[in-house]
Amino acid sequence: MGRSVEEYVKGYVAETVASVTAPYLVEGIERLTELFARARKDGSTIFFFGNGGSASTGSHLANDLAKLTIAPGQPRFRCLSLSDPVPTLLAWANDLAYAEVYAEQLKNLGRPGDLAVGISGSGNSPNVLRGLEEARKLGMGTVGLIGMGGGKQKALCDLSLVVPSQNMQHIEDTHLIVGHLLCSYFRDERSR
Image (cartoon, rainbow, N blue to C red; front, side, top):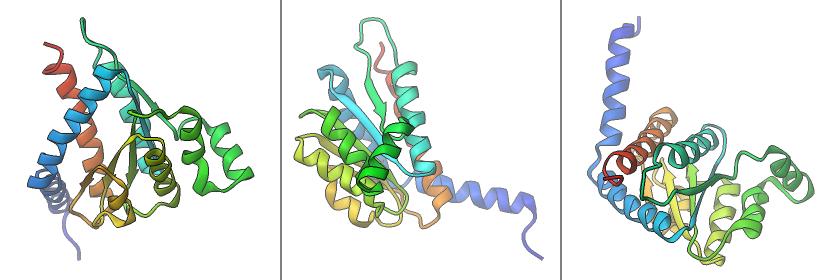
């Protein structure tokens, strides 16, 4: 017989808390806050992209960052989830390759000084890697929300926040918590 539901819940929560409170992750969040603050001040666009749950995390964070952080006297965040325009994704996937869906969008939309946030639990998603490669060519800053040691993605990022877990659910939980923490910070602290 396995663990009781209560034991399982306590274990799951403890593992997620351990992922969120890893010291280097906290330091990375401080640096990420600086990058986001500079992007808002400069009017740069923050692009989010990923696959599956990571794509929905990117959509969620783009929405929250754009809406929840509006404050009098502060510029608004310019942010966009490249996972959202389904017809565009399908056109690039069909005409070129699925690995190119984010790189091709960035060729149209990205500018020097913008910020590309690639989200991947494994750090090895080909389309996220290609998006980050293209972002670097365009002179954009690159950020990775990653897990499982960082994979190939870590080397493509100016700042990598690598969740210290091999469990996809804990990685995705932590990425969403990091995003909510950032949005709350800019709403509560930077709006004063």
